[in-house]
Length: 282
Image 1 (cartoon, rainbow, N blue to C red):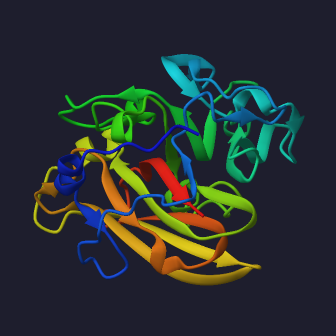
Image 2 (tube, one colour):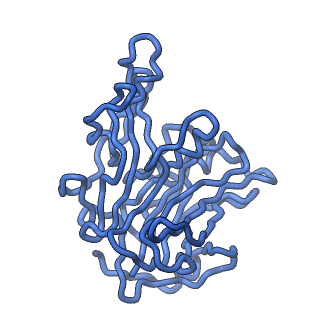
């Protein structure tokens, strides 16, 4: 794990989210574990380094666009589901020597091709890793689904996680799937201290800053299968749009062995993405 070094002035400049929306103190990992998602910390399903690289995104069998610095579950989708789609469902990258597991869902979307069922439409949910950042968005579109609205990762890191709450995005017309929303599992109970969140560039560009615009991430702690307390961080609030990383105090959650993430938006058509970095727990 990388040593935690933060300038006091930088910490003071960061907004914070907590369970009651009051400013939270900057929480440093006193003796705990810090996950900054850098390649030296992360391993994949087979114990190999989880490294960002080029991904090609397909829609209706055609290459829609490519990104050069993303790590996702598609390479691990080697089995087929009930619709004969290649798919993956479950944890597929790990940190803290395997103690923290980051899950995701992927399928190749061929069930949507009503003609011959072979045209790939890449479909995913949960977490991916990314190093894609931009702060020049005017209006958002799906080519920005892996981009953070930030200069880089939180506190000087290069890599961060992108969460896509695909269960919320598909509410009302698709059944919920496990790991189709962002989820972190721990091999034993931990006490989370804090994490940093940022807007997805797509979300940032989607909202125009009108009165009533709202986008938030709700984080729920679980222990032994029982739902616990929640912390909510608002990233869009009318004309106020978070334009960098914001710290979220997780200490109110207490001891957990799972964290789940849900997006809450004023617009039901809003993209359900956010970015996460620099998770600290003991």
